[in-house]
Structure formats: structure tokens, C-alpha cells
Length: 273
Image 1: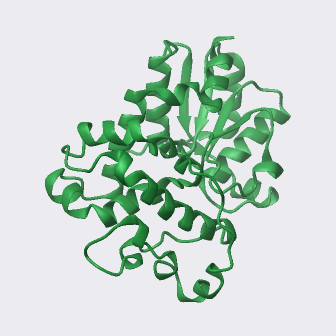
Image 2: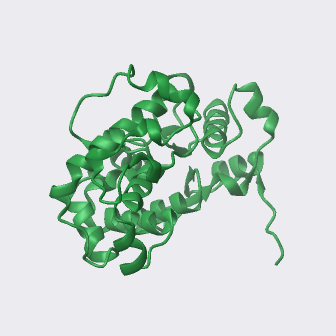
């Protein structure tokens, strides 16, 4: 298969300046699909061009000069900074993650997710219950029954991420001591590298009961697969984290409450102004 050449950064900015479309840059292909779905829901699909940053050629030297690591989030920040510097009216969406770099890299062209990631919107009762109907074969408990525990486990993992910016994905299954798993039994220190474990008990846990605040994107599906592996893998046919996340994103869009959150309210106002 012939590989499609990536668009150079300057080509993207020139196109955005010369066309009457609203250009939105996101971190990856699944984010692109999500934002395109949003544009349909707000009757703006004909106004918007969504590009994932993986399809843009960005000189690694630009990341180095900005003090950023090599990753899609960093590339989005570089695109936003160059657009803002040149006065080109585009919007770039970057994951807030655990807040690292938010203050240092904010600019007019950049919008941060309301919570750690787009998937974070799924961590509420209405969306999890809709995901159960749409893709989890209706086999999970009512979301109200397990959401407090899921919030606990997400908070535990989030606080470790806050103190370790480039934390590899935890081994969530190792965080549970028995096969009869409950989210409240999760021990985050057992899911991460040995050299991190000694300090975890001293980390301050963030306050609040809104699990969306602590829902680092891939951790949601990772924890759900660890606790509900039989249902998700064998009964719903969802054997990977990506498959579970696809169901969660679909439920987010069907429920639709995310559209009134800060990020998408600002995006709709900008697209339609």
C-alpha cells in the first residue's frame, strides 16, 4: 500500500489561512473521529476540517527547542504555538493529562480537554450505563454500583501519574490480589515499577467525587478490563483496551452531555462565529 505523504507544518498553516474552513488539529485518529462526530451533532460538519497531528510533518528540532518530549501531545503544542505566533486562526486540542505543561504552553490557538482526555467524559453514570447497552452486552452492573470504586482506582493511579510525568501504563491486573475483583481492592503500588512504590503512600490524593477529574484516558479501559475481563472479553467480544475505548467514546457521543462542557462549548462558538 502506498503511504500518503504527511503534510508539512507550513503547508497546513497556509491552507488554514487561505481557506474559509475551520481547521482543528487533534492528537490522533480516534480523536479525529470523535471531533468529526461532534461537528455532525452541532451541524458544523461542512465548516470543519479535522486533522490528526500524526499526518503532519513536524521537525523534531521544534520539539527540542520547546523543551518537549517526542509525542503527539507535544506536536499539537508545537502546531498551536506556531499558529498563534503567525496569527493564523486554527484550534488545536491537547489532552490535559495530569496538568503537566498546561500553564507553560497555553496560547490562543490551543484548547485543553476539560478533563485528562476525551475518554474522561465517559466516567459518569449515564454514559457508563449507555456503554453497557451499546457495547458491553448489558452484562455489567448498574454504573451507580461500581462508579465509586472505579473513581477510587482512577484517583489512585492519577496521583502516581501526577508525581511521575512519563509513567508507563500500569499493570492493572497485578493491582488486584484475588480473582474476585472489586475496584476498591485496587492497590496501585502493585501495578507500577518497584522503584516507585516506596513513595506512593506519601502522595496526596486529590479531593472530590467526580471521577472524570482523575480519569486518565487509557486507565479507564485498563481498569475495567482488569475487573470485568470475563464480561468484556468473552461475552461482549472486546478483547483490547482500544475496543473498550471505542464503546466508551460512542456512548459519550450518544449521551451528548459533553457538548455543554467548556472545551466543546468554546469550540462550537469559535466554529460558528
